[in-house]
Image (cartoon, rainbow, N blue to C red):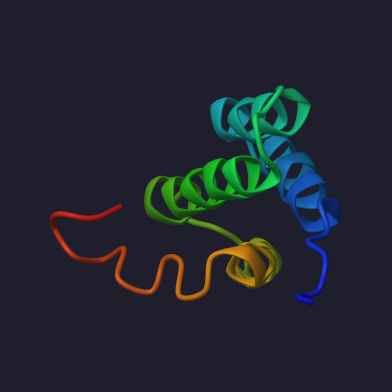
Length: 93
């Protein structure tokens, strides 16, 4: 049985983004975390997509925020192995 996914790094990342002025991205993460989802894997996939957007769009991220992004993606990969590894490709996000 795979390890359970922790929402803690996503909450910490959202708070950190808000403190750095990335309010829209903070709201995006909070909206996903507070939303209603059909399955937990759907929730985790949405969180992963948001984290990839944060990694791409929020410049510059502090070293602490970069570490949080990596930690969040490790959580996502518990449910979606390999998630985000090829997000740099022009056809993927």
